[in-house]
Length: 193
DNA sequence: CTCTCGATTACCT
DNA sequence: GGTAATCGAGAGC
Image 1: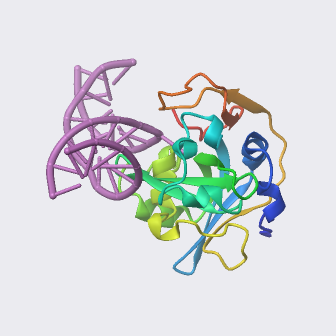
Image 2: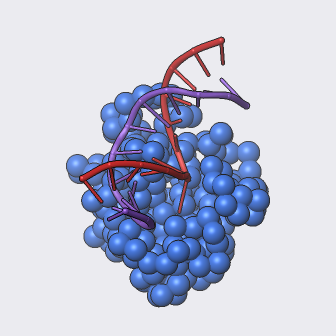
């Protein structure tokens, strides 16, 4: 499998467009000499200043500053004791991002199982934002990492496949909860919930 | 410094 | 489907 990372221009667009097109792409993590790969099957768009549910809604803080910078960087935060991975989108100065909610494990599954401590069945290994971060060894030390750099330990690579995209309400939020900004690959077995 | 609140998970019935 | 555990960021004092 040849791994060509997505370029900056991919992220330099409207957040919902980036979200939909991230479906089917490959999350690639270099870790301890191994390469872990997961196919993105579920994402959510967070629109920044127009979206009360977005962390960036109230403006820039130390935590959210990467969202206001160049697109194509990792926005990682902790919630309920777990880490979540987002990708920054939109032009510099505008704070859109895409939450990676679920991936299908493709390569490095033994390493993922080692990093996760519970529920090691393949279907439940990476089917949630906190779970996939644990399985991929993603924590705050990777905050702000450039996903478009060949050298990065974390990047997103191109992959082509035919599938149908389904949209639905975002999960686990209370504000702007009815907007259809969650996108999934229809009928994929590794979607969360 | 203290307090509150989740973009969650795992385990229970 | 219901809920306890969890912990850092952000806000307020």
